[in-house]
Image (tube, rainbow, N blue to C red; front, side):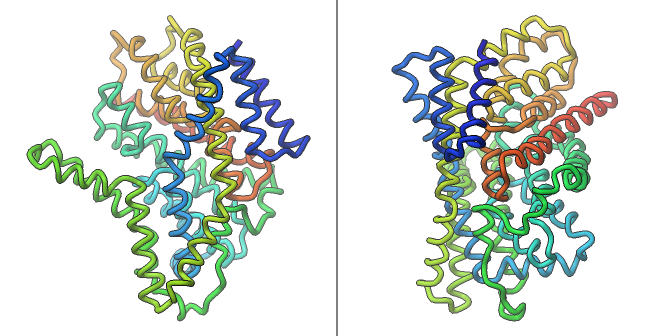
Amino acid sequence: MPLLIVALGVVVLLILIMKFKINTFISLIVVAFFIALALGMPLADIVKSIESGMGGTLGGIALVFGLGAILGKLIADAGGAQRIAMTLIHKFGEKNIQWAVVVASFIIGIALFFEVGLVLLIPIIYQIAKQVKMPILYLGLPMVAALSVTHGFLPPHPGPTVISQEYGANVGMVLLYGFIVAIPTTIIAGPLFTKVAKKYIPSAFEKMGGGSMTEIGDAKQFKLEDTPGFGISAFTALFPVILMAAATVVSLLEESLADASWFFDAIAMIGAPTTVMLLSVLLAIYTMGVARNIPMKDVMKSAENSIKTIGMMLLIIGAGGALKQVLIDGGVGDYVAVIFEGSTISPLILAWLIAAVLRVAQGSATVAALTTAGLVIPMMQGSDVNLALMVLATGAGSIIASHVNDTGFWIIKESFGLTIKETFATWTVLETVISISGLAFVLLLSLFV
């Protein structure tokens, strides 16, 4: 059985990392080979599958991660992150600093992909945690909760946007209902869950520092008057959000101005994450370097140091993508489809359930959501179910129980310097809270719309 093979593969992975202390990157690649062989994949296809999974994952995020790390380091080394942190602390007060982080992360998360938002926010969160002498995870969990919720429920993120097209749902209604579901879900999975997690996994909250990503924000401390102004610091940090949001708004006008296709092609290129991050880095070189009379040699040294901190993490993320690709090419998704064929459960619950099983089996939230759409569309025939709610139910299922076959699991582990056990107890549980809360609010909303 494919699901049993996947479960055994996960157990082997945990044993290699936790018992034998083998490097996570090496362990992931070994297990990818093991699962591919156990699933009966043709020998000639196994290496191709692993290489395409590694390349496909890194091809999508390596540039974004690298440029995002440079942007974060430039802002931190110039004192911009410290200025943002101190201003937020002053405005919200230490007691409400978690809510400041949630609001900021939610706004940023609407326009940015999960990974981009993460590399932008971690240095700032690290600076805030240092200033108020709090464990970084106390602010980090609400941050990743807000980013994950927006990634799962709100267009223009890839999952909800493409599922809306597959189901034929109105994207505007998905966005409207998505906000209704996302806001209470973020509150439950963010500040409220963090309080619970702090009690049952205290070791994770004893870390005042973090992992490889937080080193980007580990800049020297400045006198406040020596830092860039809050306005220019915030503008530089939020520039990727502003660019992407502007590109999204302009793209909505495309149908009414069909004769200006070259213009919209240009906007689409500028609004792509890689271009956005490149332009943001160039802006930061000026605002955080040139404009403050910092020698270019020092600015470039900051850029080089930022990349050194994320090298191994990129390999681990790529290996997670390799494992995901093996599961897809090995037919795990097709097997799940057979299990649910002919089911008579409510379409909303069925979409959530299929997406959840696919997510646990192969790791990628976007792949789980898209595969689910293909499976449940035939089952929706003759049903009067709200299509926008179907999109949200599918999105909720696709977020559940992030674990070792999901690149997000390794990003969070490495970013906050957690052990595997601590990552399971915080991030995996948090994703499950988001998934179940999201389904609950979707079902509640279905009573009124």
